[in-house]
Image (cartoon, rainbow, N blue to C red; front, side, top):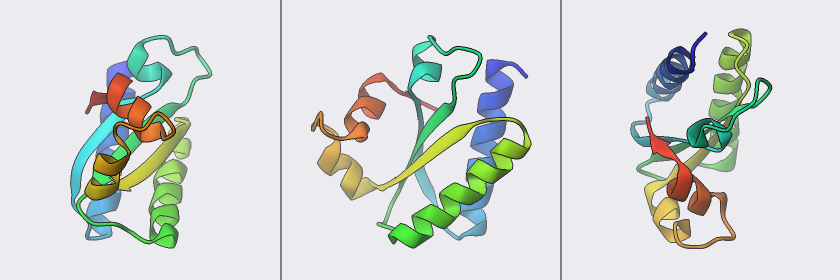
Length: 109
């Protein structure tokens, strides 16, 4: 699959799983080597998903794991990080959080 095909399929699966859980997505950001254009053949895909309200840790883990499994079935290795809009805004300027780097170098998809 091409970069564009993998990106589109990944975003589709992310949207479908959040919709199935009754959670609306505010924004999806692709970050890391894939967004910078320096990914190698074994590089994974990193997605930051921003949702309106905070989710519990177990809920985030369940949704992330489901998405990762569905993508793995398509031979796409991915990490999915879920942040509430408030948490994203709280962490956006702090270099100690991955949120900072995702927003700095990532691309909205």
